[in-house]
Image (cartoon, rainbow, N blue to C red; front, side):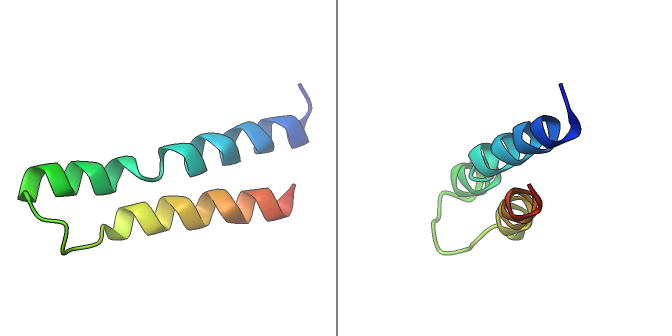
Length: 53
């Protein structure tokens, strides 16, 4: 595997798993009013990695 393929796999994993923190926060608080900052951070990181590829 070359570095571009590894970067793509990391980006795909991050963008796919980005919504897990939001689901956890919603489940824990029983409320959908708050948005998880972790979700946006992970999603932004994944998207930035896609742009780098």
